[in-house]
Image 1 (cartoon, protein in one colour):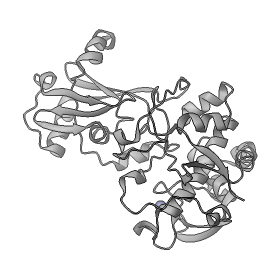
Image 2 (image 1 turned 90 degrees about the horizontal axis):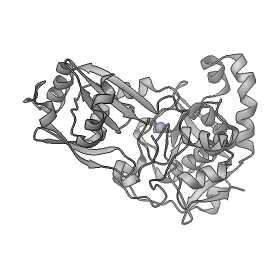
Image 3 (image 1 turned 180 degrees about the horizontal axis):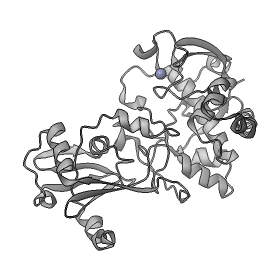
Image 4 (image 1 turned 180 degrees about the vertical axis):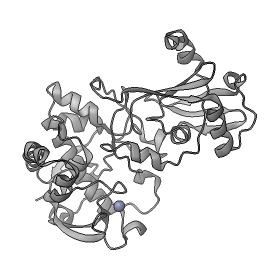
Amino acid sequence: MKKINYRGIILYIIAIFLLLYTVPTLSLYIIKNNFPEKKSNLEMTGADNLSISDEDLTMRVVQVYDVNKKAVIEIEIEEYIKGVVAGEMPAEFEREALKAQAVAARTYLLYKLKKNTVNPDEHKDAPICSGIHCQVYYSKDMLLEKFTQAWFDKYWTKIENAVESTKGELLSYDNKIIEPLFHSTSGGKTENSEEVFGSFMPYLRSVESPYEDAAPKLNASITIPIDEFIKKLSDEYGINDLNASNLKTKISLLEMSEGGKIKSLKISDKTLTGREIRSLYSLNSANFKFIQSKDNIQIVTTGYGHGVGMSQYGANGMAANGYNYEDILKHYYTGVEIIRMR
Ligand SMILES: [Zn+2]
């Protein structure tokens, strides 16, 4: 249909039209059950003391603020990691992908413990919480509530095995614990950390992610009425000179990231980031294109998530193609080593 006719325009003129809504970023999170997206700590300031100590490697338990019970619980680390793998990756995924997620989850735990020298305001009595704010952890009770007994019987042993077979393993770079960012689907290539979160991390480099064909949100689109598109830009950013006939000339692309996302674009006299547009219209990713028709704007997206670090669907695709968890982790986290707790 129309899409094909417009494709050339989309690819190269790229100046397409974006609209911004005032949809709160919250809605982004509600939509994505299985792939909660947390804010990167790269955007937070604070002294870094990420060197791995002997003490770090002999930890056994962790205090977690349980967002459901609204209480702090103490859990043995490997048990905690099982609940995180269950919370952060579909259990249907390949075993090696689940193992990669287990190592990332354990790494993230230590990263948070070291990064937060004081407990965050969101949970002052524990260094980490069981919600999206940190990393999602489901207790067995929660899993039974959220899924079914049949699900539990089918997948729990698989999750346990993935965690136990990588027991104590962590990712380090230059003897420091890394922030193992991940996302659902990169759209073919991951992003450099500084292009998304502003901080350069040597292990968060843009790499190819060629095995994402099975990702359900690799390609998606939403369609919204032109006036709504324009209203959002007006309400949120005070851009008031747009109309259906001048959108094409008022919107232009400024900068793309290495991974193919829109870093910035110009709308009228304002410069907005791709992330701002993503948030405004609740888009799957900042890799988007606008297609204008008579009454509507179609926003076509590629990939799902911020695109930095490990692509979960990419990891699953690698696993399905014979790569093991170590291959996966070393592919998505450039130059890292796997070390073991004792
Ligand atoms: Zn938290």
